[in-house]
Amino acid sequence: MFENNKIFILGFARSGYEAAKFLIKRGNEVLINDGKEKSEIDKKKLNELEKLGVKFFFGSHPDDLLDKSYDYLIKNPGVPIHHKYVQKAQKLGIKVINEVEMAYKLLPSDVTLVAITGTNGKTTTTSLTYEIIKEAGIRCHLAGNIGFPLCSFLDKIKSGDIIVMETSCQQLNDIKEFKPNIAVMTNLSEAHVDFFDNSYQKYKDVKTKIFKNQTEKNVAILNLDNKEVLNQTENIKSNKRYFSCNDKNVDCYLENDIIYYKGNKLLDTKDMIIVGKHNAQNVMAAILVAKELNISDDVIKKVSCNFKGVEHRLEFSGEINGVRYYNDTEATNIKCTQIALSSFNDPIIIILGGLERGQNFNDLTPYMKKVRAIIAIGECRNRVKEFGESLGIKTYVYEFLKDGFKKIISIAKPKDVVLLSPASASWDQYKECEIRGKEFKDYVSNFKNELE
Picture 1 (cartoon, rainbow, N blue to C red):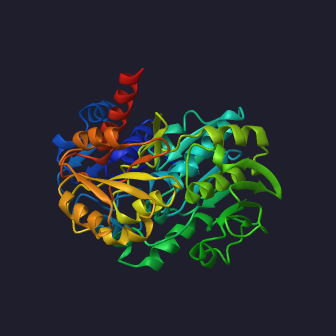
Picture 2: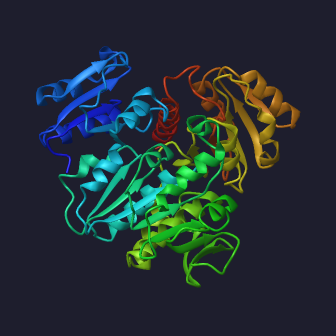
């Protein structure tokens, strides 16, 4: 399969690069088309593929570039579902798939595939699940939307291996035969509807495709607390396992900060580094995967309690003089900051602000009860100041994070939580929000070093 074919790859990016590299070595004729100019493409990767014999067409999508001579069109997940080449390929009878589907077809038959999706929490759940399996001494690979295309592992995967992969809605949209042994849905809420013709229902239906090919021999791990998940999975054939923060009549549940499995205490969430009810749900999902793989309680507890979370997502960044610092720079919208604020019971000093795009900070009001100070930064800092003062919360205004952090040092007290969760994009000052998060962590690290 996928040998000596003529293949059109639509979109360079990580998945296009890895797919081309793999396919050209199997005797396929490969063309990559990308709307970006050649000068915008990673030169090292481009030179590597050119030497292997991959052909390219950059900068546009000419009508006659794709013709019926191609056997497959492999679409990058980010390419719009109604792209003209996708429509043309379908009319010409060319098979349209993505890198995930291609790689899946080439996996050894006895590999165990764990696929994790959901609107929120999928990266944390995927990372934690992988760490638990790895700690158990089982050969395991971390793949998918988390940044590692599945086809990049095809030469390394052996019979009996386990693959843990994060699967996005864009990836799931183009699957045909993809069938995980264990599929997880963390939750569902409205997102990415612009990609799916502004239809929330279409988004949910695509997400649910993760269970499409499963049978009663396969396992679906589901969030009982999320009505959308329950509605979407009512008729799937999978063998269902549930986790819940509200119902004890399930396989894994949370009660009084304790996570139970099959009615037996497994771990105390107070012993975990990651915080919040949403993270308890992520941990329970990972526990259910681990239990399907017969991993011991001791391994699950050890990894879950020491897991620091995903970088830049409510990431524990250190404790200094009894003050805990958390980097949640990827909270670029109000919803994410609401989740962050609801994750703590101690007093909070929150850093809010960034790019001005009309975000309604008033939607944070019900979540601000534990906030004792606000550091307002960035382009929308004056609106943050107005919001903070309307709640009677002391608000300090600075254009730059570095100046705000100096103020934090002077006002933070033992048991305080310092939370970078801006509810704002970073593009007013940073190329990407990760740079903002790294800067925050550097300030924490440098402050700690100064005291030692």
